[in-house]
Structures are given as structure tokens and as C-alpha cells.
View 1 (spheres, rainbow, N blue to C red):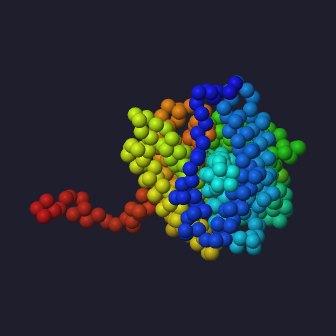
View 2: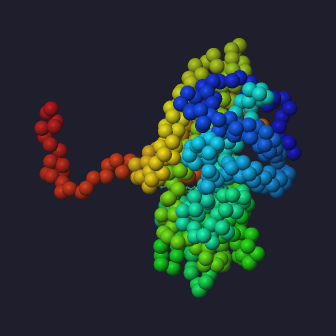
View 3: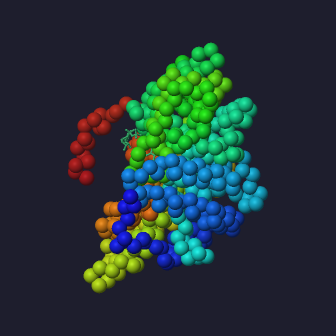
Amino acid sequence: MDTRLSEFREIRITKYVPELDILNNPILKANEKRFLEDFYEFLENDLDEDLRKLEELNYHVEEPIEDKKQEIVIGIMKKLSDHGYYSTIGTEDPEYELGPIMRNALIAYALCGGRWSDYSERYIAGNWSIEMGRLAGGTLYCNPVNYKANTYQKENFLYPVSKEGNIGASAMTEFNAGSDIFDMELRLMEEDDTVVIKGKKVFITNGLIANFIIVYGRLNSGQLGAVIVPTEDLSLNDFRAARVYTYGMRDAFVSRLIFDRTKVPKENLLRGNGIDIMFHQLTEERLVISAEALGDAMKKILFSHTWASHREQFGKRLHQYQVIRFPIAENIRQLNLLLSALFQYARTLDEKPELVSSKIMAANTMGLKIQTTELAFESAQHCFRTMGGRGFIRQYSNQIGLLDPYCMIHGGGSNYVLEDSESRRFFKTRPTKPERTDVFPRIDLFFE
Ligand SMILES: Cc1cc2nc3c(=O)[nH]c(=O)nc-3n(C[C@H](O)[C@H](O)[C@H](O)COP(=O)(O)OP(=O)(O)OC[C@H]3O[C@@H](n4cnc5c(N)ncnc54)[C@H](O)[C@@H]3O)c2cc1C
């Protein structure tokens, strides 16, 4: 059953807003613009139809849509991969002379935000779920595997994803160990020439559709480690994956995984400490999520702007009311400030790859991730407010992906945990013996 009411018309973006067009941004360099122009062309010619099919499916209830979605999502990842837009591992880029991190960030921005197309005079859809699937496979799976894999592991587990567009997933989160990943309970038991996996994972993006999963857990030594699970291996038993149904990110296959003494060969085990493997790609992940959030915020602002320009109440267009107009202007200002920080960090990391292990860089990109995902969240709230009752129904919220940014306050490291660790760091001091004046208030202070 299609849930759309015929009385409600679809919102169509009809106006070009120069401040929201990244190609119009003066701080983007010529080669970066060329890359983006080509990506937008690919988005319009190769992906737009698939993304609209996904949107269409989300208007239906009481009908099986998951198999159709799965096929579309897997097809999109393959198309991205065929054009070199999935993983940035081994992407030699003489054409655009673009570093891998800037490249990754620009794709993330464009794929989440979509774009008003001057050529076809319509809005080309963006989709954060699809981008999250791309990030999970192309970056969160590929980067740690590339970091630690030996030649055998690269050939069998990395290249099928990074070069051929198979689906990858990264499984850290558990029911008890969420933010606190050090508390992981899943066991990786080393027995002769096999690793026996016992435990459960939850909220794993791509989990249900993945061909390869990097699974983190506790080794015999008690240390954290990582093993690759090829899900299509015919001898793989006692493994189950099920979809977790979310209210946002509806096209991302966020999943629960159960490993019930699942056996994989010992040669699938990555060497090194699991924490080091997980954290190695953190700075890049934070930048790509920031780019996603900014693309998404741009989309929400574009929809708020359109609706404010068209909807008339009390004899005036909504944009004539300051309460509607001001938040849109403020969000646009924030968006452009944060975009310039993103470009600067991404370019700097590309120029100096050794900064990937800089603690200050990791902290700065963490700050950017918090600010950008909070902006996406805020832009969604303003969009919801501007839309009135329409924001409340699928007919409109699907098209805009209104609830996607609610998920990303937690995805990629929960903002509140990150903020807490940030604030603790600011107050970190060497313990000193308290002086008497620290224990009792100094009386002279009261008379100053
Ligand atoms: C859309 C989406 C996709 C995801 N994809 C993946 C994936 O592919 N792979 C994967 O492994 N995981 C994935 N996750 C899981 C995600 O990483 C976790 O949801 C996140 O780490 C938070 O864990 P939790 O949900 O158990 O919340 P909890 O850890 O239970 O936290 C609950 C609340 O308490 C707050 N809190 C907890 N500790 C502190 C603290 N010290 N200081 C301040 N506040 C604190 C948190 O911020 C949060 O608001 C995904 C999540 C989402 C929403």
C-alpha cells in the first residue's frame, strides 16, 4: 500500500541557492571542483534512478520491500566501485591530483547532499544511508585490513572489496559494550589452525549484506584482536545476521550478528592489537562523517529554504517570518565555516599522511565530527519545524531523510562520549599535593 496522500504535492527544489552550492565555494581548488563535477555527473546519470527507487519503496507499507532494497543497494556499491568511488585504497589519481582523504570527503558530501542540477532543472537525490554503506565497506572495512593484512589476506579479503566492490562491514559494537569498546565480550578462541568466534554484535552497518566482515573480539591472551569473516565461505556455519529496523537510515542494512562457535581458518586473523587496528583509521573516519553531515545539512537547509519560499500562511510566504528565516541563515553560515575547516584538515592529512597518528589531529577531527553532526541534527529540526505537519509524515520525511542525522549523533562514536573525553583532556593535570589554601577558601578572596 502506498502511504502518500494525493492532496499533498511533492516538494520540489526549484531555486538555485549559490551559498549552498559547493562548486560555487571559492575555497575549493580547481582540481577539486573538476572531481566533484564529474562525481555529480555520475550521481545524476548512474545513481539518481536507483536512489529514487529506494525512496519510492519507503512509501510502501504491508509489502515485502527488503529484497528489492538489498538488490538496489548492492548494485549501487558496485557502480560506485566501478568508478573508483567506493574505497580509496590504491586509487592512483593522476587525473585530478587529489589526495585519498579529500577525495573520500568530497564523495561523502556529494552523495549525502545530492545537488540541484542546472542541466536538468531538478534536484538530484542524495542519500546518507547509501553513503554510510559506502563508508562501512570502503573505509571502515578496507582501511584496517589494508593496515595489517599480509599478502595472502590482501589478495583474498581486501582486493575483492577495495577493487571489485564486494560489500564489507566492520563489527565492533556489542549489546553490553557500546561506547565502551574496551568491554567487548565476543571471544576469538584460537584452537590449532582455526579461530572459533563466540558472541554477538549489534548495529553493524552492511552486516546482513556483507561478503566480508572484520570482527573485533577478545583473544585467548585477553587482548583485543581482529579476524576476517568471509560470509559466503561454504564451510562457514553457525553464523546468523538479521536486520535491525531503524527509524532513520532506512536504506542502510544495520544488523545484528550472532556467532555461535563459528569457525574460520587462523590465517584470517590480522596480526597486531585490535585497539590499534580499530583506532588506526579514526581520523579519516571522523573527517568522512563530518563531510557526510555537512552534505546532509545542506540538503535539509535546501528543503527548508524551498518550503519557506513556497508555503503561504496568513497571507505571507513563510520566509517573511523571522522565526523561519533566521535559523536557515544561521545554518548556512555554520555550514560554510565548517566546510572550510573540513577542507583544510583533509588537504593537510593528504599532504602529511604521518599526521594520521597525531593525537591533536585526532582530537581536532573529533571536534569537527561533533560540530558537523550536531549541525545536521539542528538543520533537521529546523526543517521539521518549517514543514509543519508535513514533516511528521513519510510522504515528506522520506524524501528529505529527515531522521537520518538522529542516528549519526551516535554512529561513528557517540557525540556525548567524545565531548566528555574531550573535556576531561582539557582538565588533565599532574596530581599535586593540595595546599591548605585549596582545601579551605581563602578569606581575602571574599574581601577583594
Ligand atoms: C546508524 C548507526 C550505524 C552504526 N554502524 C556501526 C557499525 O558499522 N559498526 C559498529 O561496530 N557499530 C556501529 N554503530 C554503533 C555505534 O558505534 C554505537 O551506537 C555507539 O558506539 C554508542 O553505543 P551504544 O549505542 O551502546 O550507546 P551507549 O554506550 O549505551 O551510550 C548511551 C548514551 O550514553 C552516553 N554515554 C556513554 N558513555 C558516556 C561517557 N563516558 N560520557 C558521556 N556520555 C556517555 C552516550 O553518548 C549515549 O548518549 C552504529 C550506530 C548507528 C546509530
